Structure formats: C-alpha cells, structure tokens
Image (cartoon, rainbow, N blue to C red; front, side, top):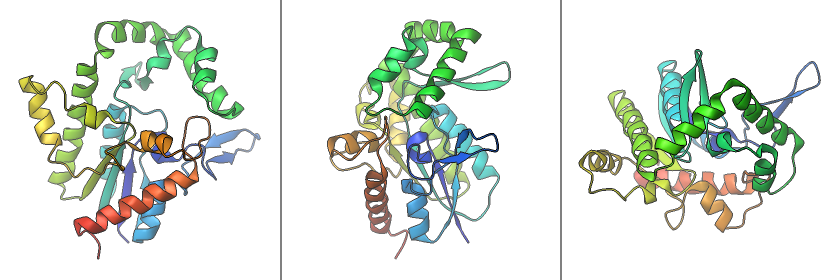
Length: 262
C-alpha cells in the first residue's frame, strides 16, 4: 500500500479532535495524532497508509525538518501534504534539544496571555502551554527569544524570507525523490508573502515558491483563517471535526482536479 505523509503543526496533528489523547498507566493523558484530522481522513479516502510527521507547536523550520526525516524512513510514498504554520515561529537547538519559540515565549504575563487566546477552557491544553512557557523562562530561552524577536524575528521580511527558504528546500527535496506533494497554509502568510518582491534574494525564493502546487482554501485563505471566517466550531484554539471533514473534501477534489486520481 502506498503512503500519504503529512507534515505540519497541531492543525495537521489534530489537536483537540476526537481520540487525540491516550491515557497512560499513571492515569495522565498524552497527546496522540487524531484519525479525524484532515490528512488522515484524506488518506482513508485515497486508500493510502497514513504517516503523520506533524507535531503540535512546530515552526516552519521544524515542519520541513521533520517531514524530510520521516520521508527518509519510507518508500512507496504516493503523496506528501504539508500545512505550513505561522511564520513568526522559529526553531533553535539548545543543549542538543530542538526548541520552538513563539510570541508567547516573550510574554511576561504567561497565564493571562494563554487565557486571552483561548475560546473555550481546557485544563489539559492550558497546563501543557503553561509548563512549556515556564520551562522557557527557567532555562533562559525566554530571554533569548526576547532578544531575537527584538532584533530580527519581529520583522515580516525575516518571517516570510525564512519560511520561504524552508518551503523551497522541502519542495526541491521532494522533487529529487519524484514524490508528488501539495502544500497549504494555516494562516494567510503565503498570500501576504508576495510583498518585498523588490528585494532580489527574496524575489528568487518567491518565484520558486510560486511554482509549487499550492492548495488554498476559498478566497485564498489558510485553514485556520478559513475555519474562523466560516464560523466552524472551535475548541480552545483549534477548529473541530467539522472543519477537518470539509477541508479533506476540498483537498480531495483539488487533487482530483490535478489529475492525480481518477
């Protein structure tokens, strides 16, 4: 059986969907990828084995890295689907450990920031975010993040440029392996990234990314933005099953339009 490999963050992983937690022997919950996320539904429709390379909270750099790593472990890959995330996330390796920093990493009022972003209460999700951010403050990652965002990471140029590097790199890797791939986005950054085209280095990446097979949701939106605007039900910060079902249907029809299936 051929395989569908999906890369992305929590939207692809299926955070807060049905069957997204498994109870461990000590009674505590651990998050697992959901069979109700859009790529799992799509793989089922296409009769392909599903391999999830997505990890909640990942940056675009981590998405590229993890997708390439998973692809290296598999043959018979029929399709790779990647949902790129918010470009203001970044990945660095501290003490031999990959870490993701976000705008939450620089917040002093951690608990208030999390609660402000949540649409609905969920103590499991809240505690997970709180522990990560507290660890960042204790380890000094938060201080590093504040300096990085102040000098580099806050600029939309660097957000888009660094994300385009990852996108083009992964597409070129998949082309070298003759693997069909379809890219989409969580927010509208790939549309917004059309700015800065006057910069030669930026334009080079932009021109390459425009040659990739992209799927955008109606009105050129990303999944998260589209689900918000269409008023699909949400958990804390993630669309529920209804949005994933519709997303899988839309992507399936797009793949059929491309002639990749009969």
